[in-house]
Length: 199
Image 1 (cartoon, rainbow, N blue to C red):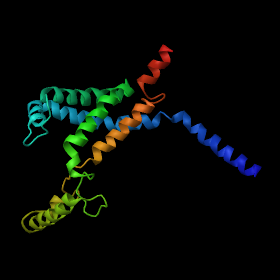
Image 2: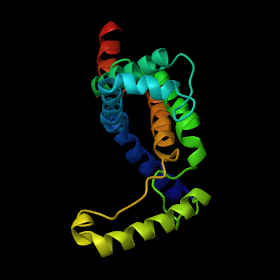
Image 3: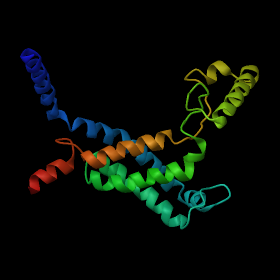
Image 4: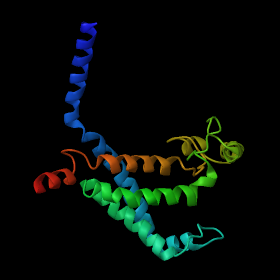
């Protein structure tokens, strides 16, 4: 039994040595999220009037109150937040408005579509909308095979139907929540170096 305890202690000690690189995980989360957020913010900024209209229109948009303010906050959070994540600066602070942005996206935009981002009728998460999309996808394939250049169109990947479910926004929310608790990462963020300098 003592040998087993010693082996377990040795394994744990070996595992503990990897903690020197524990800043790597937050760095990878930050570098994954930053371009996603920067692109989303840039798209909103480039088409700001359309973004405001979409935020405010109740018929075909989100129907949110104060659409100019809401669009400004979302655009700013994504652009500024993406930049701060790259630097690893104020990571825990910027995670909060970014998580709020993801929650608004989940509940105001994606929630009615279910979980899946791409319609996949073979998924156990498929809903009626996804099952119906399978029929549309099959019809689109038939039309393209008959009247289009199907091999050329599918030469870089399959044709899919976007379901626009909560999958991506929920994933980003979880990643941001993790960053809220871990911070930018030891050795890999400006937050770490600034805190070390001030202490």
